[in-house]
Image 1 (tube, rainbow, N blue to C red):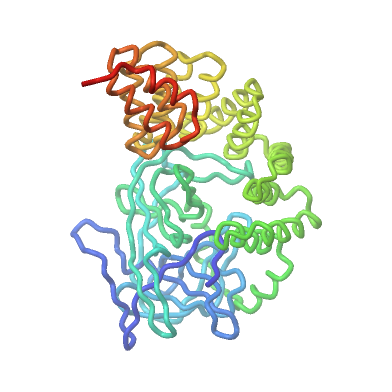
Image 2 (image 1 turned 30 degrees about the horizontal axis):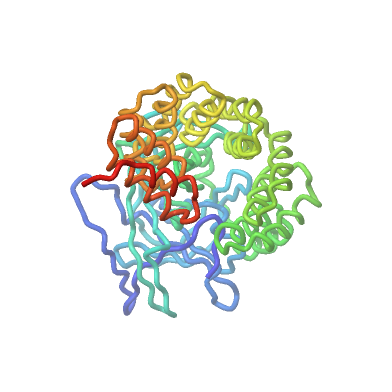
Length: 450
C-alpha cells in the first residue's frame, strides 16, 4: 500500500454502507463534509490515500496535491455512507501542495471557511482526518475511523520556501490526515493538514486556496498523471514516501538525486536527502546536505535545529548554539529547538540561561521528556538538587533512561545522605551496563544497611 507524506486510513464498506464509528455531539464539526480519499492506479491497486473536505455543495473538494500523485482514479467516501469519485481537477498547486477537485454531480455537506490571516500564536486548532493505524482494507471492504485532534497554534512561519507560510500547531496530524481540515474555535477551516510530527505539525493556510474555489473548468486525472511523470514535486513526494512511509532511504536517495540533477536548488530535496543519510548512519553526508539546505533556505527552522544537533554531538558548541538560537529566532515556539538550545547552553556552562529556554519548551509541551531531563541538568549544575531530582524522576516516568541521569541521581542521594536511593541508582546503572566497574566499586563502598 502506497502513500506519500502520510499513510492511509479507511472506513468499513459493507454492501455499499460506510460504517462511521465516531461519536456525535451538538458542537462538532460537520464531519459528513470530511472525506476519505483512496487513490488507485490503472490496475485498481491502491497507490495512496488521504483526507479531504468539501468546499461547496455542488461537489468541490479540497485536499493535498501529494495525495493524488500517481493516481488514475480517486474514490471519495463520507462518514454517512455516501460515495463519490473525482471527475476532474479544478486546480493543483504542486509547490504549495494543494488540489481542488471536482466530484460527481450531487449535493454534499460542506465546511465553513475562515480567515487564516487572523490566526495567531496560542489560538485553538483542531484537525480531522483518517489515521492509517486504524485501517484495514480487503477488496471492496475497508475499515477505519474519522478522528478529531486538538491543540493550539505555535505560530505562522515559512519553512523551506520563505514565500510560503505554514500554520505550526501542536494539534497532532496522524499519518493519514494529509489533506484534512484544520479548524478554529468556530469550526471554520483555517488550514489543510500537510506535514505531521511532534510540534512540527504544519497546515497550509486556507487563504492560499480560497481564491481558486470558483473555478468552473476542470482537467482530467489522466492529464495530471501524465504531467507528474516529469514533475520535480511529484518526484519529491515519491522520495518522501520511500523515506518516511517505507523506511527505504536508499530508494529515497535515488529519487532525491534525480531531482537535484535537474534542479540543484530544490531545497526540500537536500533536506530530506540529509534525513536519508542520517538514517543510513552517514553523518558527514547528512551535515553537507543540511548545510546546502540552509545555504538555499537560511530561515528553514527544522534544518537549523537538525544541523545544530550534529554540531552539538561533534563538540562544536558555539556553532550549535548559534544555529539553535537562529531557529528560535525564526520560530519562537519551536519546542525541540528550545530544548536543544537548553542542552547546548548547559554543555557550555550556562545553566541559568538554559533554564529560560527549557521552561518555555515545557510550558508549550509538559510531556516533552528530554526537555525535563535537560532542565534537571540545569538545576543540578546550579546545585538545586531537590529540584533536579524531581525533574529527573519526571523525565524517567516519561521514558528517559540515560546512564548520566542515574549517575546524577546517585550523587544527589549521596549528598542527601540517602544510601537506599544511591544503592537503587547504582543497581539500575549495572542493569544497563553490567560491566561498569565504577558502579560496582561505588556499590561495594556504600554502607551496609540492616
